[in-house]
Structures are given as structure tokens and as C-alpha cells.
Length: 129
Image 1 (cartoon, rainbow, N blue to C red):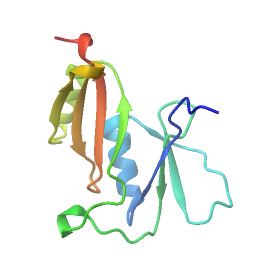
Image 2: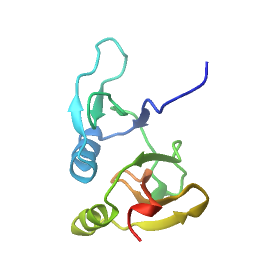
Image 3: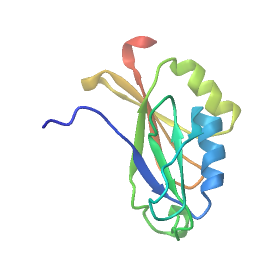
């Protein structure tokens, strides 16, 4: 039974609505249906038909700016049109750090979401010089 695809990542937050707004604006995700009976309140975000980002509500979180390390190191997405995305981040004043990973042919655009979680969006190196 080989693993063949990324399914989702779950992020705990004291203020998931804040994260929803941020991920809707920065990555274009949208709120989707979430089954009942999963315990804590939560929100699922989708880029298409599958929920890839689950946000759990009312969870006490210590943020990196308070001297702690988040339990989730990073979440990564694949995308195209790196120049458009960089402009999108600049328009929203989101600091980022591009890193070219030549061995696997990608450029990672690293940044932190509004809750301090490390995110990177990967673009094919050959897409743009």
C-alpha cells in the first residue's frame, strides 16, 4: 500500500476565522463542508473538491513570537505562475524567502501565515528563468 498523494494538514488555532480569512486571501482557498461528529469545532478549506487544510478551533497555541516552536513545522503546496504569486504576496506585504532547490527542479517561496506557521509554495524551476 504505497502512499500516493497528500491528503490534508491539520492546524490548531485559537482564532481559526483569522486563518480562514488569511488562507482565502493569500492562497485562494475556500471554506468547504465538514462532517459532524469530529469532536472539536473546526473548519475545512479547499482549493477544489478536496479539503486540504483543516483548522481546529479553541485550541491554546503558543506562537513562535513568544519563544516557542510550533508543533507543525511546515505545510507546502505546489503551484504555477511564480511571478504572479510573488506580486500577490507583495501586494499583501507578506515577507517571503525564495529558495531554489535545483536537485528536484523547484523554487520554494517560504513565508509564515498570520498565526506563525511556516508555509511554502513550490513552483517548477523551468517555468520561469
